[in-house]
Amino acid sequence: MTEYWDEFFLKLHNQQALKEQLDVSESDENWMMIPIEEAIEKIPTGCLILPDGKEIQFQALQLYDNQLTIPLPSSWIPEARAEQTKDQPGSYVVQDKPHGILFGLHQSEHELEPSQVEIYQQQLIEQMSRTQPSMKLVDEKNLPIQDAIIGCYESIFLVSPSPYYQIAFVRSWNGKAVIGSCQFKLEDAPLWYPLTYAMLHTSKWLESP
Image (cartoon, rainbow, N blue to C red):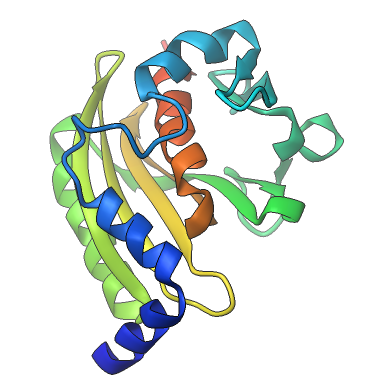
């Protein structure tokens, strides 16, 4: 498998260079198209203008009986709404097929207290490492967002023809585990990496009374 990875990245020099940039300290955001803090500030306005002049329109998507409001690019939402998967109630999938982007959420029946998020996060990483041999773990972190801890881990999937980057996250919500992820082409990480974290920071989670 190591030989396969080496050969793969030799053929994809640009992706290898990007991977090296992703390994740099988070304090160095020069490789990102837009700083995370700037994206957090602009996304709630509904329009984000990138340095190259490109505009990304955002709209608020309301899920779980309007208890969760999350801003997503308008192009991600087919028919102006996310479709709940029929075989998994509590699961939502949003895609931007032309750009190879997939965003998903799943509200598990698994009970999870805030103090258990880090342990649950490690279990998810171990499970993915076993079931996805093409996955290479890049980073993991715990983010304090709006009085909650969101456990995140980042992976590169070395698949052909386009390796992709995934940011997965888990949090405790109303005593249950909520698991989500956003995946995009590795070459597009300078844009969607900061925007994914900005969308997490600007989401609003209401607790049930």
